[in-house]
Image (cartoon, rainbow, N blue to C red; front, side):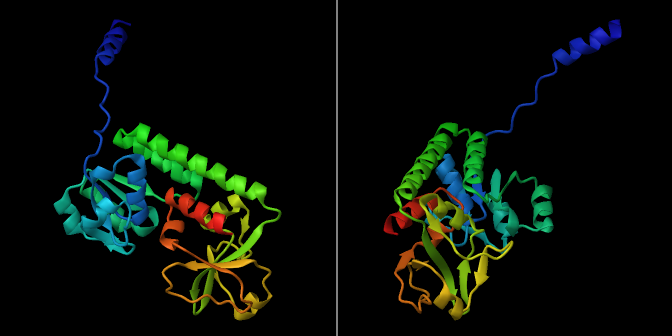
Length: 259
């Protein structure tokens, strides 16, 4: 009994292991990851980003560390980040093993819904010790959701829209995509369904017979819409609308106000 008491007394004085320090040097290995850092309140801690990152504007001069196909290991070692945020689907097991071997602190991001985006912003706010900024971003997301739902409640019927991604072959988003689920908040339906697919190939005949109200394409004009029935065409910033960050909601609100 005395030995047990002595052991318990010793354990009482063992210090609790301190939490990992808040990271000050962050590399975001995908465009959406850089945006999540911004919305979590860590914009000024970004020291490296991936190709096609365009928000916030302050990252435009940062070194490009990688793209969807991988990252520059030598450059990453040179930058010495204390947090690496990566899109889960862009890393293979060898990448993850290397990052762990080099003792990089890793945050894997793969939000597939608005709730998941908010959850990752909240987690990053906790890691970066910027909970207040992160919560403000989440609150703005919730406000925008309400605005989208108000638009839907004012509609007499849903608006059916095909979101064309490419014209040769004709490719479009399906109703399983996160974009479609976000636009559904304001009463926009995506009448393309293929089981377990986020996009699908359509024929011109399907466009002739589809019961739709409008077509959306990227605003940069890289493709001409396949539009045999002369329907209204709305051009949108697809980089903003298709990226898993709160800016998706902002872009959805812009689109919903046009349709």
